[in-house]
Each structure stands twice: as C-alpha cells, then as structure tokens.
Image (tube, helix red, strand yellow):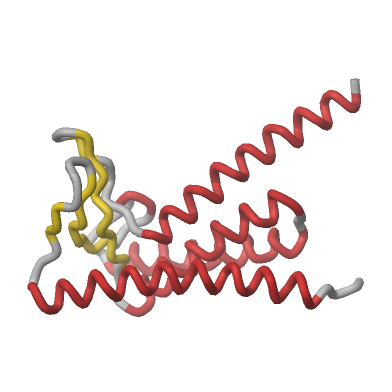
Length: 165
C-alpha cells in the first residue's frame, strides 16, 4: 500500500482549519459569557447569538441529567468518530472530503464534551418567533458534510445504475 503524504497533509490541514474555526468561535462566545455573565446578542431580525450548554447529541437530543447516559453517549460518539476516520482513509473524491467535514466538526464537539462536559451552542437562527435549534460552527461543518455525502451517494449510485443498464 502506497502512502501519499501530500494527501495526508492536505486532509490534516483541512481538519485542523475546521477544528480551529470551531474553537475560535466558541472561545470568543465563552469569553463574552465570562465578561457579561450572559450571551444574548441580537445581530439581525433572523440571527442572534445565544449561549446554551448542550449535554445531548445533535440539537440537544438525548440530553439527560444522568452522567452515566452522558458518558455512554460520549463513548458512542468517540467510536463513530473513529469509524469516520477509517472511512476517510478508505474513500476518495467528494465522499472523502464530505467525511473530512463531518470528522473536523465532530472533533470540535468531542473536544467540548471532554473538556467542558457539554457543548456550547450559540447560533440562534429564527424567522419571527420560529426558532431553529441553537447550534455552533462544528454543527455547520457536520451538516454540510452530511449533505455532501447524501449528494455523493445519490449521484454515484445513479451513475452506477446507468452504467449497469
């Protein structure tokens, strides 16, 4: 098996950029919270910064007060993150870069789960009084990666089906 160090370096840089973008934004919001005791910043008529601590998974699902459930969820996230890393190694093209987006975002949120025992979410998107779940930059990368994965799988499967016909 030939190891392409240039690709490993490029992939690692992309993952590091995603991780750092997430860390910088979260650190900034946490610094505001430290100085002001609350983060509730009106930016536009559809976007606010509002800090909440998420102990669950995506969008606060499975957020329970029980530490054993939190630890179990965290362990499952670690395993899934390692599976994604393995999938990155085995894939190429759009699928690989989609997985890199998911992996980078996952590392950002995993860091917070370990360091803070919760993930700081702060981007509050809303239209009038209809609010989406509060999320963070890592969640944006994870979501973009999943959307790109769906796109890649849909169109690669269509090409395979057309070629086999």
